[in-house]
Image (cartoon, rainbow, N blue to C red):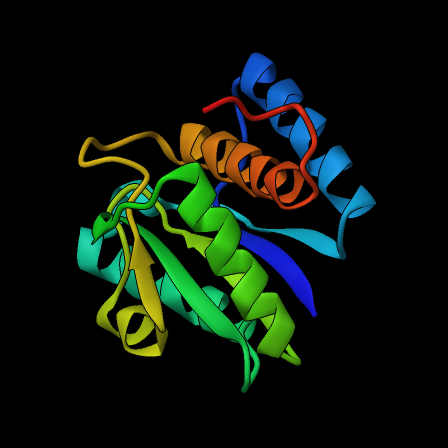
Length: 157
């Protein structure tokens, strides 16, 4: 069982990239982890938002295997506290034989085909974040969840 963050697009902001690296390097200490980056769609400016979502969906779906549990990061998704996320991850990792995927879409969100493969929609907030910020927040929360489950002093209620 592995936790994966699957995301569309490259990280352009160096400070956010450094922060993301900080958390993605810590998570494997606790459990198998993988960061999967789907490259930006070429010539996206010439595409409609729907076509861009379709092309991104093709690449996202290529990353998903039968038996994976797929969580879409979406502003309309269920919001959890850090402790609730930790408990959720603990439950899922105890029963899943495949991957627990946290999926972050491109600038226009997800195509219907990706929503159809989702097992859950998770909201970081009702606000919208850039995909770069969503990656950092997701990685930090996965790391935080692991420290909560082990009773480490990182999280404070």
